[in-house]
Length: 245
Image 1 (cartoon, rainbow, N blue to C red):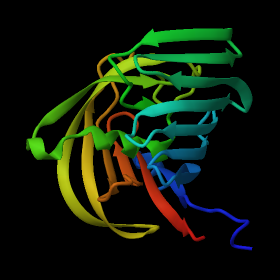
Image 2: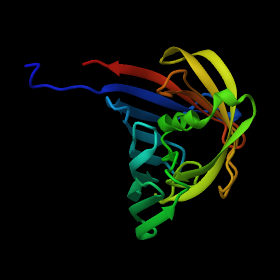
Image 3: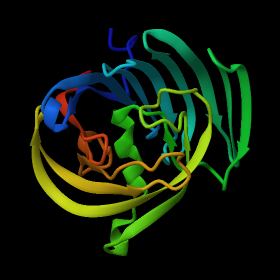
Image 4: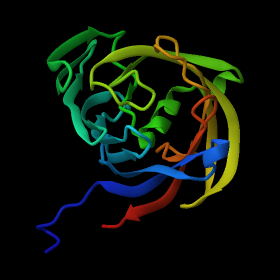
């Protein structure tokens, strides 16, 4: 039987809870996310995530996002439902010096885009919280304290909830490294890296500061996050399962 079956990749499956930190809604669950990450023997990886935001108008998003062994994005699929109605779906591909997408949206109908990039695109924001920590791999922790700029990030939506499109949109981000911490979340206790997104030049509306904690290993698994400002939202990994052979 062992000569027939093959399972060379490793997988994790998890759940992220979305909670409000606004004084009048403190601790109220406002959404959830179920994700699975598969890492292949060459180091390439794919995240599959189902995301739900209950705040009106509700948002439901399904994504499949893949990166190559060097963590460069290769392709992504996004399907979006807003207010319980179809908003759009699209496929994104990232080449040596370009990004392109083919989407169909309820507002724009068929959309074709192609953008030149500064070499290989380093990171793509599809609005799944599980993938937010993957941006942090770009921070050079050997460079010392201070804010580092990621000058080119493409998004599937410039909306803070990712509730438009999906289409390509270009921004930059400023990231600060806060330090190493040992934290406890619903999924357990972890050695963590703590980062803070402090700026997002190019967005139509400035994003409030966003603290992100991820595993202190080479997988950058999202552990928790907190957004301040007008959003006052909190995200926590409440379940994590390492799938066995």
